[in-house]
Amino acid sequence: MSGRRKPDWLKMRPPSGRQFTDIKDTLRDRDLHTVCEEANCPNLGECWSGRNGPGTATFMLMGDRCSRGCNFCDVETGGMDALDPEEPANVADAVAEIGLDYVVLTSVDRDDLPDQGASHFARTIREIKDRDPGILVEVLIPDFQGD
Image (cartoon, rainbow, N blue to C red):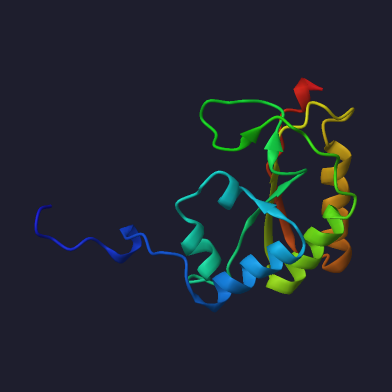
């Protein structure tokens, strides 16, 4: 493969463009977290720049600190904050502002909560669907301690 050009899809581009800036500002204004940032995803520039559509972000619910310390993950551990009761509405507002028709929700593990955050997920999904019943929501849930 020496001397041959790499295909465009294989080249990493730095985050840039208006869509990238708009998504970043929308998330900051609402104090929201994404797995894109917290896990140092190498595709952040591609997803947020909207090169293949309106741009997207994988929302990370329940804060930016995890109650576990998995070796494979780059998310901070410990020092858990109380849940932000406005987060579900803020996520739904951000989804609407960005103009997404497909949303991915995930979270840190919250073993410190009685339901490990299940009700927070449910409320976030309801808030999104209340604003746009046709939106697709993919949910990547934690194990809820096997409960």
